[in-house]
Image (cartoon, rainbow, N blue to C red; front, side, top):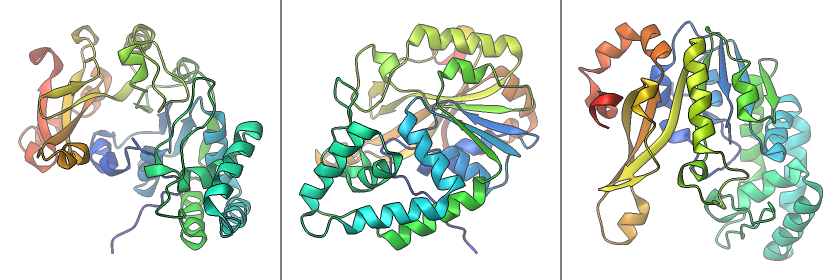
Length: 309
C-alpha cells in the first residue's frame, strides 16, 4: 500500500518532491534530524513518515511559520477548525476576504491566518516586501485547500511528529551548536545569501561568508550534514558552489523539467545540488559506493566536489 505523506503547507521551493532522494543519504543510525532552515518542514515530515530519526529539531527564523508548524503538530484540532472558519469566510467575496486576512496577518502575525494565506496565494509562492510584510496576491482561479483535505493533512503531520519534535525560531548558527555526532543536519538556506541581493521569496537572508564559516565549524566538530545550495537549468547555473576547501561530496539530483522553460518553448531539465559533509560520507561509505553504480535511478551526477570545481 502506498502511503501518502501529509503536507498541509504549500510552499514554493519546498523540497517535498526531492525528499525521498535527499533522504537516501540519511544514516540509519541517526538519532535526531535537525532542520535549521525548515520552511514547510518537508524533509522532517518525510523522514518521520519513514521513521528515520527518533526526534526532530525544526527551526526557521520566520516565527509565524514555525509557530504554525508547532500548532498543527501539538494542537491539530484547533488548527483545523481555525482554517475551516477562515476558509468558509471567503465565499461572499473571496478576493476581498483574502486581502482582509492578509492585512490582519501583517498586523498580528497570527499563524492561523498564515495557513489560509499560504493555501490561497498564487502558486504557494511566499513573497515579502522590503518591510518584511507578506505581500503575495491571491490565486484567482482557486480558493485554496478544502477544509476536509487540510484537516486530514494537519492530523497526518501531527501523528508523525507530536511528542517527537521541538520547534524554534532562532538564528541558524545557534541551532547548529546543538548538533551532535549522532544527528543529521539538513540545510536548505535561502539563495539570497548567495547572490548578495534581497530576495522577496525569503523572510530573511544569510551571509554567504558566515554560512561557510558555520560549515567549517561543523566540520571541525565532526557533524554530519547535507546542504541543498545551488543548481542549474539547462546551461544556466543558480547560486555559487560551496568551496572545495570544505571537503564536501557533491551530488546532483534531477529535479524534473523546468515549467518556466517549457512556457518559453524550451525543453530543459532542472538539477539541484546536494553537498554531503565528510563526517556523513564516512558514515555512509558502504552505502554511497553502491550509489556510484546506480546513479541513473535518481542522481544525474555523483562526484567528489574537488573534481568539478
